[in-house]
Length: 415
Ligand code: AMP
Ligand code: GLY
Image (cartoon, rainbow, N blue to C red; front, side, top):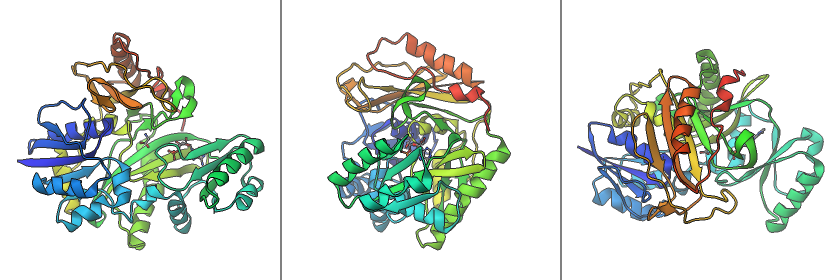
């Protein structure tokens, strides 16, 4: 029997753990550091922070882990895959060099431009003067992205010159050498492509998903890590999905190969479908959270075999369900994302099909972070799945907050 290590602590990692536990070959999953909500049978949490690569590697060696799957971006950009591979451990994720695709906005933009992959026109700047000149080129609304790992907070959108100048003053006062990518605002419909990328160019695409980044209903309020998601997307045709893959995913994987930083792991392509076709908003080098919680339960095969086959350079057989829509709503602490208040009791939701719950910031049964849990249900249509989740949430007595309109775009039929 096989042992799997998942690196991370959120609801995404909980969904990953549950997916591996469904494999008949896997008898134990360790999540480091995990959280107190992960109480599934055969799941163990070990409190090692995701940034302590040496302790994680030692854990994998001591526990004779057969496969490590890295959920979150921080250890990837620190080089966890390189560390593990040097120790002869099987690990699914990109190298430190390939992780720059998410870790550095300017690295990603340079590659997109060099290889002519459709994206917003942009300029990377390192000074207040250079940044001040850019509205003349791109107009308003205007988008600014801070270089470096953003954790969902790196993107700002400005409606006018005043807002933009105030932002620049603030950024360059804090760090006169700040690197910013300034780009044109893309109008369109957003969705995400997840590609499981193996060795020797082998790739398996999952069903598409749509996230809801703004904190409040009707897409109002600040950006968050994601308040809910659903998958698959009935309003993207198979031909449109293929077009997005051909134009945005395949060429970046080829580019990474040509640049001697071949990509292995989960490639997350944030797509804006514009009137002139699909464009890249961003790449991430891991599953989305909460997208993973609605995508992973759709795998009907043995996920352990799929990932090991990909690491062996074999095309894994991929087997995703196509009959139901999976929809997930994220429960957050009051005050999230700016000032989450900890301490609220976290409800225990009995996992009766079609309902599952994946836990995130839970400590001793109480909210210990901003993102606390994702409640997922599936049904024949998006509105039925939505009704299923919200019916459950309406009878739960909790001080946690959530959005009430996850999946609202599904019926708008907009491409
Ligand atoms: P990120 O933090 O990179 O995930 O971006 C957060 C959100 O900002 C994206 O999901 C988009 O909704 C928005 N965004 C980023 N870049 C652009 C752009 N060039 N045009 C319009 N919206 C954008
Ligand atoms: N849900 C967006 C992200 O994981 O970045």
